[in-house]
Structures are given as C-alpha cells and as structure tokens.
Length: 126
Length: 160
Image (cartoon, rainbow over all chains, first blue to last red):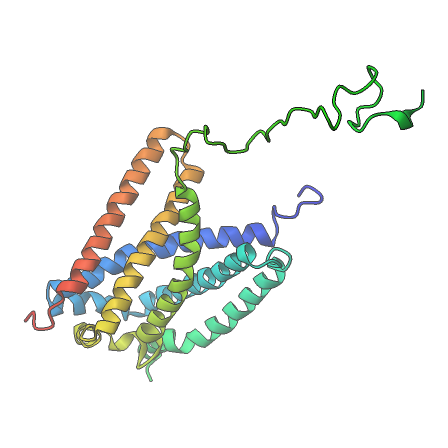
C-alpha cells in the first residue's frame, strides 16, 4: 500500500466495496421476490408451493444472509448520508463505520433465533 | 527611486508609472465562469445531481420500510413459517399495508436500478456493452415495477 493513503485499502474503500456488493445482491433478490409474490394472482396453491421453499433450512440460511446484506446496506447507507450532510461526517467516518459494524453484529446475533429457529427445529427436532 | 513610491496597482515600477489611477480605473474583467445574460442555457440538466439526492432520500425511507417489512415477515409471529396466501390476503386487506408495499416496491426498484446503473457505468467500458446492459436493466426494472404494482392493485383474496 502506498504510504499516506487515506482511502485505498482502508475503512473507506472496504465499506464502499461492501456497500456495492450487498446492494447488487439485494437488487437481484428483489426481482425474484416480486416474481414470487406475483403468484398470488395465479392461485393460492401456486403461491403457497413456492413460499414453502422459503421455509426449508437451506433457504433459511440464505434468508439470514439476505438479512445480513440488508442490515449492513441500511446502516452503512445512513453513515454515507451522515458523511455527505453532517459537517463533521467526514471526520468521524471511521468511528461511524465501527459503530455500524458493532450494531450489525448485535442485530445479526439477535436475528439468529427468529430467522433460523424454525430451520433448527426441522433439522434437529424440537 | 524607491519601491515605496510604486502605485497601488501592485505591479511595481516596471515600466514607469501605472497606467491607471482612481480617476482612470482599470477596465473590469469578469470572472471567467461568471454567468451572464448571453451565456447559453445548459442543455444537460441536473440528472446526476437529482439521482444522487434520490439515493439518499429514498435510502432513508427504505430503511424504515424494509426493516419494518423484515420484522413482520421474518421475525414476529412465528417468522417465515406463517407466510402463505392467507397471510398476504390478511395484510393487503388494509390500505395501510398496500401503500407501504407499493411505496417500498417503487422506491426499492428505482434505488436499486440507479445503483446498478452506476455499477454498469463504472465497469462496462465498451459503448455497446453499456448500451445492452442498461437496456436490459431498464427493461427488467420497468417490467418488475409494473408487475408488482398490478399485483398490489388487482389482488383478489377470493381468487378461488
């Protein structure tokens, strides 16, 4: 890394990379999600059949990943807004990123049981 | 000849006395980029600035709409297990949740489409590649927004 670099290879760049990657992933899921929801116009059975796949353990894990992507994108997005509009935003961008990460970890721990609980019960019995 | 006698022009006694004085001021030169009545109107508009602002405004609203959506669908009341046609019918019986979902659909699709437009602008270098990728993006976006809107407005709980 070149000496004296403020951005490259540091918090600013990696949060930008993560924001971009999570954004693209969420957008692709959104297409699928509108299509599966559109099945309510076909028949209740068609909708319930497809939604049943959302309740399988493997897709539950994907849902946990989706929650992870959305939570990071949302929290870091608020940080980007603060950097842009808050006078001291740029000065505290690093502290704000670690706040985002800490909040994200707490929320992800809290999401384990609600999002993955049903899958665990199915896999290991209750 | 001492430099203290140099005139107010600040140039100094290079070629004798300054040409200008309080009675004979130097001509006013306008700042290079100053807009005048003769400046032609920009034909470009402020699209990129509006897009930038839209990302921030829609982002704030989406944080509330999407996190609320996740809480209802994946966390509260048994999480994903309760979701089914009956659950959707129950929620869309209320105009409040119809508006919520409609707003979420439009804002999220436009926010995501503009994000992907930026990604295409960044990485696709050949003009033809950019054209086709953006064409695909805009087609898929318009289709998905219209489909989702149609589904919300024409939802029929007694379809069977």
